[in-house]
Image (cartoon, rainbow, N blue to C red; front, side, top):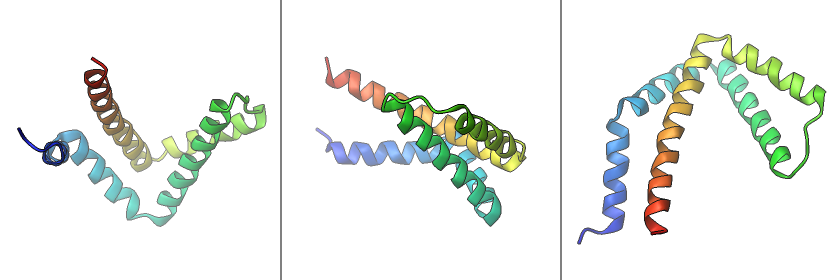
Length: 109
């Protein structure tokens, strides 16, 4: 029987070989090369986490907060490199989420 840690390392290796990961890394490199863009995306991501945390705690964000977030979203997505990065990140996150679901389902059998 193969060691589960070795299997996990194999999975990581496979993920790094998939197109979605390669697209993410290329998009991230573009963003990282532009300090202002990287900061803008980081701010956007932090605001998104704040909204999620607020929502998950049962609170409803006020209109002003939502409006500011939507405006920031429009600015971020208006930059082709930022949009490419965020889309690539979302695609890769979806794959990882699906892998977690597969593992969770298998462990709950």
